[in-house]
Amino acid sequence: DAGITQSPRHKVTETGTPVTLRCHQTENHRYMYWYRQDPGHGLRLIHYSYGVKDTDKGEVSDGYSVSRSKTEDFLLTLESATSSQTSVYFCAISESDREGKLFFGSGTQLSVL
Amino acid sequence: AQSVTQLGSHVSVSEGALVLLRCNYSSSVPPYLFWYVQYPNQGLQLLLKYTSAATLVKGINGFEAEFKKSETSFHLTKPSAHMSDAAEYFCAVRARDDKIIFGKGTRLHILP
Image (cartoon, rainbow over all chains, first blue to last red; front, side, top):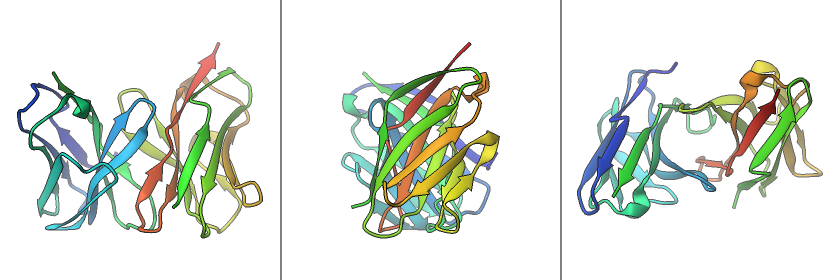
């Protein structure tokens, strides 16, 4: 398995609280992505990064922010969690943005009550 | 905009039977297409990818997919299903901005 670690694996929080999810990689890949997976929607891209301090929005970025201060770490923050953000969050990495070969972490199950 | 449509959110086949999972794409340029598989409680992993080198693409675990431009399809097949194939399968396309866009997924059930 590619060296991708997501933490925490499970999180239960209350509406209105801030939440930060962490993705850590040991592969030194340039590109990192955050997806959310919801029944009936497949995977949808939240934010991605193409280098340290270089990030951009995906298709469902509202309510989320990201930071990448080091190659190996990509943080996803929910500034004020809402119930609609209850989901499974996946981090992915890739060496090239053109090849399409993504390596995924094991996911974080987030429940916002 | 590039997109993929997977036909059938659930597919059931008997063990030993043919597996056919359908994917149609929308793209104004030659597409890069992918199939990913997700086993329970795991992340996705790449099964195979089409990058215009050959229309029939072989992947891992005996799966293959055929690119048919005339039908805008990239269906995934396996001649003989095994219980271990039970999983969710995602078709995906590389968009103009090089991001990977996923379909909604098809859950494959294998009947004993």
